[in-house]
Image 1 (cartoon, rainbow, N blue to C red):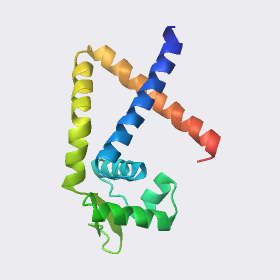
Image 2 (cartoon, rainbow, N blue to C red):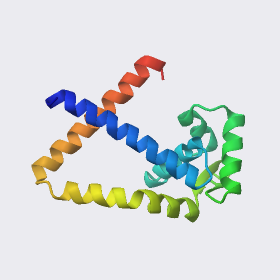
Image 3 (cartoon, helix red, strand yellow):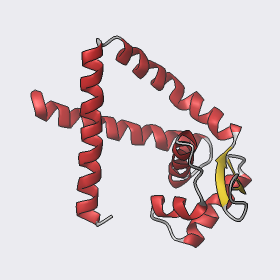
Length: 152
């Protein structure tokens, strides 16, 4: 094996290992896998400076409004998430991660992130740019394939 086939196999293996790690984290914290996926969406929205509403979360997860309400209620009760009023539009509700969720994420994924950053930093600038460009392309190709297959 080598070349493009090995790249495809390695990407698949990374995906499988990431799923396994997520499943283990969810189980260790008494969460469902969908709960963990929801927390990742809320975290990504916070990092982008765009608070996520329950309706937006429902669309990202492909859940109905009642299922999303149950999920958010569960995450609120467990201390991982809270609802709050949007800072600019008090009529809107947005979701906010709590320290419990951040701490759990750091404990589980922190060492992996540190290792990835260390390996990435060891590359020369040209290598770093090539890796980033490749990963962006793979992300875009994956999203495009999903949209073609499921129409969304």
